[in-house]
Structures are given as structure tokens and as C-alpha cells.
Figure 1 (cartoon, rainbow, N blue to C red):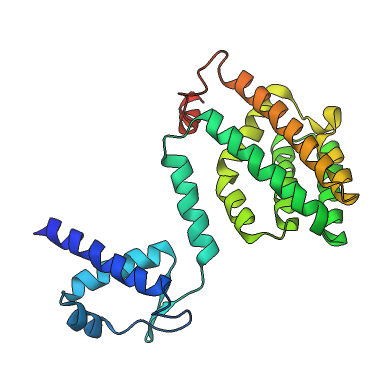
Figure 2: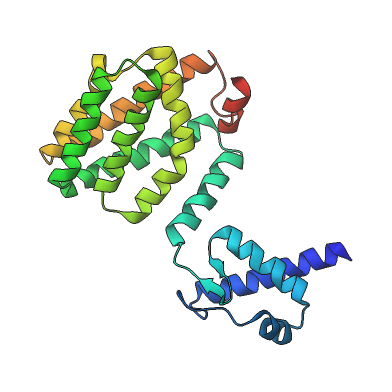
Length: 244
């Protein structure tokens, strides 16, 4: 009996979600009342409540006390959350992750070179200055992540930004391991400075070239720090947490 209710709730959830995504239930409007949905869909109030709770969890709607269930514009957050779960829980290998990182970051700097504002350039440079000055490993990692995310924002491509946000937990693991095993790369290799200069000078091709080199060096340091000689086509990214 419980199994049937769960299955039915999932069906109702999918139906309501489809209506939201096809704009039948519009953003900033309320869903029909629970009673109306029960009558229309021929299910119990408990089933409707379970389905709505799942939609709340997904970030598609929110409960407003005394008013009802409001459809909200949380598209980027929902996409990022779903993609992040897919990356963390899926059977994706280290090789696949690094190949994807290269594609995303190279495209980000390409667009940033064309679209970055003066304010965004200043924020990037400030990150570099602090990276070179700090002695604290955690602070360095935070600044490294911040620098690359500012490039994502400067790309002015919302989909690229959302994908990059989804990748950030895994990217932080990469940077943590690189700093732990290879040291702080900015004071010695100046990758971030070179990338910044290319973006500032609107050198899109140069920015992509330096970013690719940066990502490949970072990947090598990371892999050397994890496990020498491992099979990149079978080692899944989620196993990193098991190796610590």
C-alpha cells in the first residue's frame, strides 16, 4: 500500500512539474489548492502533499503560509543542483572530469576576453595579488576558486556559469590536492597572471592556450598526488573522497 502511494506521488509530481516547465503554471502564480488538485487528479490529499514536497525540494515551488504554493523562478539553482548531483553520484572517471573542465574553462576565458568589464578585471587582479601574498593554504584555495569563478561571471553566459557552479565541489578537491602536493602554483608558474593579462588585452586565443596549459599542469599535479599509475579510465571522481 505504501509502495503504491509513493509510486503515485511520483506520477503526480511529474505531472505538476511538467505543467510548471511548460508554463501552464506560471512563475509568481499559485498552484491550484490541494483540494482542487485532488479532485482533478483523482488522488488523495496525502499523495498531492508528497508530490508538492518533492517540488519544494527541487526548488520549483515554495510554500507561503496562508496563501498556498507559489511557483518560483529558480531555474539556474535547480539546474546546478541536479547537474552537481549527477557529477558526484554518476560513474564518471577522472579523465572525463578533466576533459570536461578543459572545455568549460577554455570557453569561459574565451568569452571573458571579449566581455569582461573593468570592475571584473579589477576583481580578478585583486584575487591574484592576494594569492601571491597569502601564506595560508585554505585562503589560497579560496582565492583560486574565486578567480576562476569571476572569469565565469565575466563570460556573461548563464549556462556556462551554471555548469561551472555545479563543478565547483569537484574543482575545489582538485585545487586542494594540487596545493597540498604541488605547492601554490601562482607565485612560481604565474598561470593566473598570464590568463588575466590575456583577458585584459582581449586576447581570446591566448587566454584559451594558457588556460589549457594551466588545466593540464593542474591535472598532472593532482593525479601525481592521488595515486601513481592509476587507470584514468576506471578511477571514478567520487572515489577521491575514499582515498583521503
